Image 1: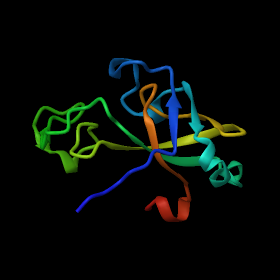
Image 2 (image 1 turned 90 degrees about the vertical axis):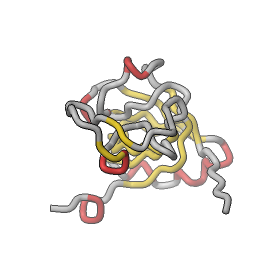
Image 3 (image 1 turned 180 degrees about the vertical axis):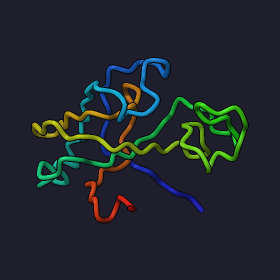
Length: 134
């Protein structure tokens, strides 16, 4: 079985190395720009009506063979699937961001901890009634 992921854009962020980025993007106030590739320009139609977006992107600079890690702020190892650690078999990251501006194929967002040059896998609007369990 084979799976093919095709990037839809690239992230331009102030974070050049892992040590530069916040532990969670929601805790930072830096902005990043997501450049959507021209072939996906039509996919952005009406996206500006959403204040928050879910950004799925590829953490290409992490270890991929770890099955257990020590989570941030903890002292004991546990299974990778029970953590939000970036090192995973498939390093897909998920960030909830604030959409600040859309200009053509460039989204300016706040709340993203991605390293500069990370590839975007998908973008989805955040819907509180679906994405937030109370």
